Length: 165
Image 1 (cartoon, rainbow, N blue to C red):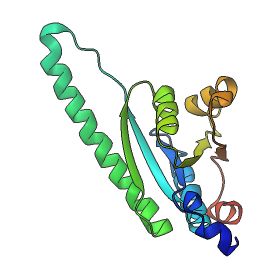
Image 2 (spheres, rainbow, N blue to C red):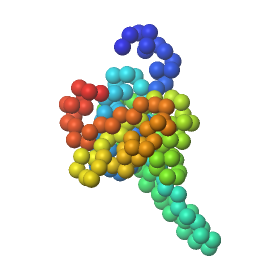
Image 3 (cartoon, rainbow, N blue to C red):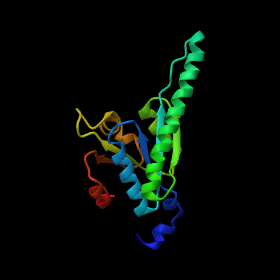
């Protein structure tokens, strides 16, 4: 990369977004994003989506407690993933927690934060398909995004990731 590109403030603030979805292949996406950030100077962003709980009148207190517990779990998982990214890339990632339906929360964040330059997902190689988020984005909604989507095969080795990132 030329010095001219590295000094461009838009490129310096670029974010590579990974969605923490609890999948086994998430570690592949984190590794790829971390290696890519090393090469490009971009930062890794980690998004955890809390699905909204329904609140029913006198059960609102239970729903609030469930929301607090879910947020604490989200923070724990984000911090674990952040440690992985920091160890691999040397940079502390940006952490996001959003509420809602996962696909819509991803789209909303991408549309809101213009520093997000890539969405990095890993595909499931063992199941019936690449995974729900990958399927939803690539099959029906790829045209609604204004950034590239990188789908990393979930069976890539560390060496392969380093050579392609």
